[in-house]
Amino acid sequence: MAAASEHHSLFVRAKLVQMFDALERVDGTPIEAAAFHSFAFFVNVLSPLWDLHPFEGSVLKEHGSPFFPAVQRELDALIGDRLVKVTDLSLSTSSTGDEPKLVASFTLERSKCVELLASIRALPDERQSEGFLLELADAFVSIRPELRDDVAVVDAAYSDPSIAEGRIVDFAEWVSSTNDNASWRVAQEFQRFAPDNVSLSRAEKLVMYMRLMKRRVHG
Amino acid sequence: MAEASTFGGVSLDEIGNLAETEGVPGAAGGSLPTKFARRVSNLITSRCSKGESGSYTLSLLSEDLSNTKALCDHVEQPLLDHGNDPVGDHVFITSVTLTSAFQLKLEWDSIDKLFSFIGERGLGDLPAIVVDWRSDQPVGKFYRSGLNEREAADAILFDDVPISTEAVLEALKNFREKIKTPSISIESHGKRIWQEAGKGIPENRPEECIQGRLVDALSAVFCGYNVRAETPTEEGRADVAIYKKTLSVNGVTAFVCEWLLELKALCDMTSSGKISTANHTQAIEDGLYQAIAYKSNLGALKGALCCFDMRSSDLGDEACFQHILGDARENEILLWRGFLYRSAKAARDIRKFSATGTE
Image (cartoon, rainbow over all chains, first blue to last red; front, top):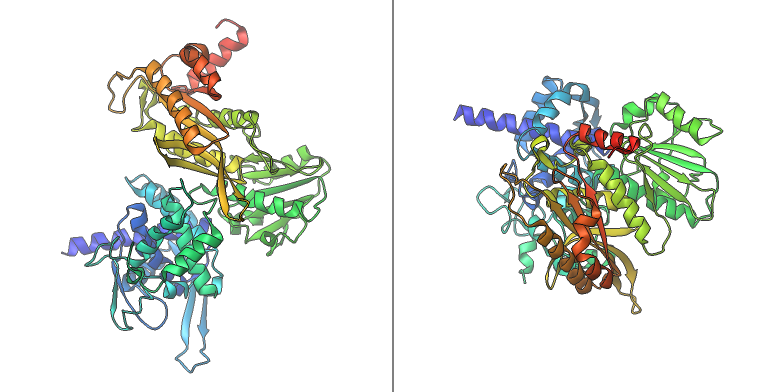
């Protein structure tokens, strides 16, 4: 049990490094923690488009953007290992009288990750994963920086009106990561509106999905 | 049809509306250099309509902007992607989205001096696009591997005329240059074509590996076009189709297929290391008839059969295509073949023999 948990922890940590690498290559860093969780959310709900298994299958629906405790835990570990660095730390005050919050931005400590990334790339399936993350990161950074944390709130699965705040949004935990995942279904549905003789690729469906998210969050 | 509730918080109308108004994204699935090429191309097209002037524009792509911009004095150009800032006689270093852009403070009086500056400042490995504004229409060159490798450049077409046969042949020739030896073919994390090149063992489904890379390469050259793989037709899936987005007389978005490319990888070994029993003469003939059928199915303006020859000996175009020349000519199918060497030495030997005339 402990070994499995350690394995999962290592897997998530490697995934986070890959996510930072993809964001960095498209100029998506430094990134605030909330925006990073938002990106992690899209990595999870859209990875079935690439036949990849999400590293988290569900998330608690809260007021505001989704938050993955495991992502935060492993992000903290990466900072401790000096693979990710904190580039900005400030206290945000709220106009609604909420408690002030510490807001941090992160970036990859690239020089320390070169070998690690090369090792990850050499693993079977990871090149596939790299392609997916780059495509998603490229689409994600087209959203205005100040809205990147909020964009997951308008995601098809997360904004499902039948799931109340305080309940679990399950897109791959106990349900199918495809047919029971509203985000995947919306991405697939674009095919119905494609011109004749055009069979949309997974990358096109992903980009169209993220453009829909951009349209929704930009208003 | 799926129930509306299966789309969670998104409505079917929203999905349809986005698909209708934004259409199929052109740069999706491409490598970062290809996305960069297409975005710079859009910027150049937009600047053309605003009467851009000057001699050259040089754009460099960085995947590590915070460090590379420090290699040269610069000023930030935060709104470059809007297309309202002049770009003539400027050098930019940008992110792939062009949303982060820096104009480099460089002075030069000739293009070769500019290229030297770039190399000296350690920027010669960055993918680069040079636009020459000195004629009526701008002319672009895309250096995917950077200005340090100037011989490996692709022309970028900004004009709105149909893609010529010469342009396709040039693009295929340049693409073949990038995969002609096993070591070149795996540069830039490209998908491998050979499993064990020395023994002639290809990767599993070599045609698919080549197809993916060819689509990416063509997308960077024909930036105003949608280059698609595996387009379904009545008689099968077309390997590569190059579409131009246009408006029909009713104002509806339509796609015109300008070119249909049917690909064949000719191997004398299988990916499991066994001697292939494939009949190549028959495979080439089948490829021609597939090209004819798909060209007709898609209403393509032009078609080509492209053979990537991975066999041990280079038998030449004539031996390869002799038996189909008549049918290809009659059906206006262009025939093209690119030989892929199994080692850099084999490529060098051929060059040496050709140079000394002893082949």
